[in-house]
Each structure stands twice: as structure tokens, then as C-alpha cells.
View 1 (cartoon, rainbow, N blue to C red):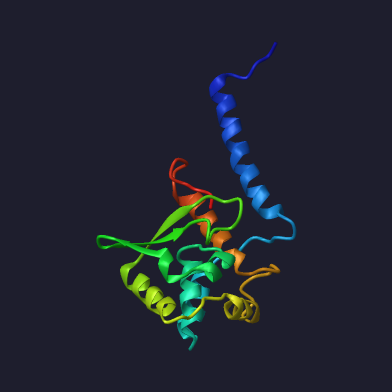
View 2 (cartoon, rainbow, N blue to C red):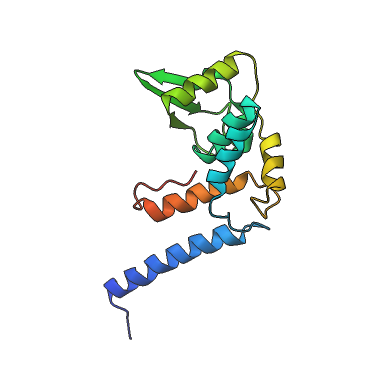
Length: 168
């Protein structure tokens, strides 16, 4: 028999794993790759918007990679403080079904702005931001908001070593 040595086999498997992950991202039903610069463009759109909810949603999606459906479920009680640190408690009330509970640390100033907005009885929505993304052609996909998570995931995959990289 002609066996491949262990080191060569591990190398082949590592390459195959990376290629499979990239292929899966690209071939999801009708999903095209997220455009580079989409996160920065969305934050700029949010900042230019006169709607505070749009600005907050833009930051939650582009900076913190929160899903659209999770953004709309956020309430003030999901913003927690521990010492000087603020975080979002993405629990069963907020998270997408069949995903895990998680916490997401927030910049203190942003957390205070978000909490004040939600405490005032306002609700977050990504509808106007999604329309702006389509208007400015920031995505070729049917659901452009999802591109923010996909782009964040791709960047994390490039930057973080395997043990630190997490799929959300």
C-alpha cells in the first residue's frame, strides 16, 4: 500500500477545511460574497441618518455583527453592566432560534446611548437601513443586512487564530 505520511495528510486536510468553509459561504442559496467596505459604508450611512434608531442599528450590525432579527428584539434589559464594562445579553428572548446564548461587549458610550434610546420606549429596526443599503448598492444579495455578519465572519477567519475564531 502507498500511504501518505501523517504530516502531508494533515496539511491536505487543513487546506481542504479552509476551502470547504469558503465554498460553503459562497454557495449558500443565492448568497453572493459580501462586498469589501460594506461595514464602513453602513456605519457612515447610519451616522448621516437623522434617525437615531437607524444609527444605532447600523452600529449593532456593522460593529457588533448582531443579526437583524436580534436587533429588533433588543430591549433595555438586555444591556447589562458589570463594573465599567457593558454588554448585550443575547439570550433566548433575543437570539435566533437554534443558536446559542452569548454576550457581546459594547463600548461604554455606545451602550449608554443604546440604553437611553430603548429606555425612552423606542424600538430598533433594520428596515430603513436595509433600504439604504439597497439604494446605495452595498450588496448584491436579497437580504443585504446579512452581509454585515458575513463580512465580519470573513475578517475574523482571516485575522484570528483557529481557537479564537467563533462562528456566530
